[in-house]
Length: 109
Image 1 (cartoon, helix red, strand yellow):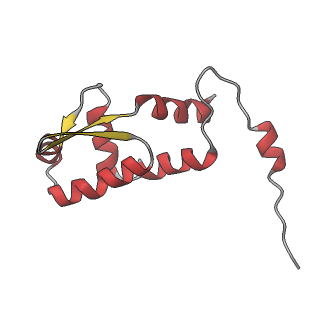
Image 2 (cartoon, rainbow, N blue to C red):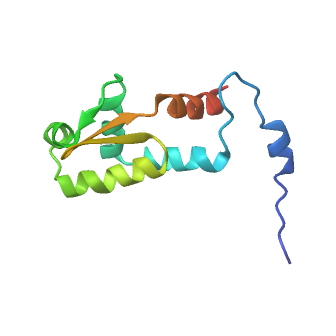
């Protein structure tokens, strides 16, 4: 017995029209998966005020090592939630607030 699932109904009914950019289901899944870790969620909360932070500020605030921070940065960057800016030896990150807002509004609306 073969089980086939038809998601075409959800693909048509689930579409939402909004002023924000439509985010694919796969992209939203990456974002929510990245946010599922408590440390990464705290990092996003720290960045939510709009200020870019450097690595040492984040590690000091969260009490984590630089190696662990780099691991979390990679995950958040892969999801598109952060962008890095390097000046000399200092790397700072900022939050992609638009992507986060679009992902949340696509789920709520």
